Amino acid sequence: MPSYIVVGGQWGDEGKGSIIAYLTLKDKPDMIARGGVGTNAGHSVFINGKKYAVRQLPTGFMQTKARLLVGAGVLVDPDVFFHELEHLKDFNVAGRVGIDYRCAIVEEKHKKFDRSNGHLHKEIGTTGSGCGPANADRVMRKAKLARDVKELEPYLTDVAAEVNDAIDEGKLVLVEGTQGFGLSLYYGTYPYVTSKDITASAIASDVGIGPTRVDDVIVVFKSFPTRVGAGPFPTEMSQGEAEKLGVVEYGTVTGRRRRVGWFDFEFARYSARINGATMLALTMLDKYDREAFGVTEYDRLPEKAKGFVEEIEERVGVPVGLIKTGPELEHIIDRRENI
Ligand code: GTP
Ligand code: IMP
Ligand code: MG
Image (cartoon, rainbow, N blue to C red; front, top):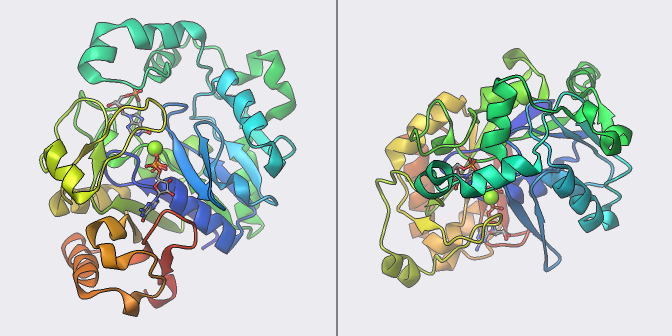
């Protein structure tokens, strides 16, 4: 697989961060490029017991040989960017990161508007990161671009050219998506969505590659889907029920408590289809079946957990190649060879 895309299949926070972290350490891609909206997304990863969260840079930062890129479609908030360079300095990020010079910039006024506007803040329940207003300015063709920000100059590059060159040379390129299918501006639960399409095709476009250049699309699902902010969630359970199941989560960016639901097979099928999934990744299987915690071989999974995986494969119609069974990177079953 010379190029593959990882996207979220539900409402974001499926644990893409931990799947991407595993893939970067296992497959050692030469290049990791981030697509998606911008700093509204938070991916968190546990490495040796320490938690790292990124909102701007690719989650694959821990593979210290890879070139790290932020595609032209992504919004850049210089404050967040420089904060992350500092936060991740142990991984020599500053020396290998590139931002496309065409990225649009999130400015202070966008953040203020996102946090004070009743429609965005109260009704839609946005992250307040300024992404929606910045994308609106971009569509109005009045946004500032990365090439206009002097401090970003040392990091500017042509991401589309770099990614296409790498694919031409047969290098391995991992493209990271953000958010999740249900938040797509086109296919999600409009108007309770984010400010862009974020399906696999859009993520490819964000980093400047055409659909014919993508070999695999991995769609990540969580055993108990979650949603933050307002909007329909047909399989939502009560907070009490979620607590009984031990599924209590808070947002990486906003700290808001996440709403929790039962796995929605029909929605997952729709999501896999529009994303053109070639493979699924399933996270939090240990929350569905405690006995699955830490298991690393498929055959050692308890029957209940196996039954769930098989039901997903059957009803969604796509094989499950990766299964997370706990928070650490090594809590994973990798059965990509068998599918
Ligand atoms: P994305 O936005 O999709 O990247 O997800 P996220 O990183 O926002 O989700 P969250 O902040 O909830 O982070 C996921 C957390 O759950 C990380 O700390 C992971 O280590 C942890 N995690 C990932 N997979 C599993 C799993 O299978 N079981 C358990 N118990 N924890 C997991
Ligand atoms: P915005 O993207 O900040 O405009 O927020 C619009 C909607 O998308 C809100 O419901 C947010 O909670 C949701 N959202 C945006 N990004 C993420 C994400 O990375 N994870 C989960 N929800 C998100
Ligand atoms: Mg997240």
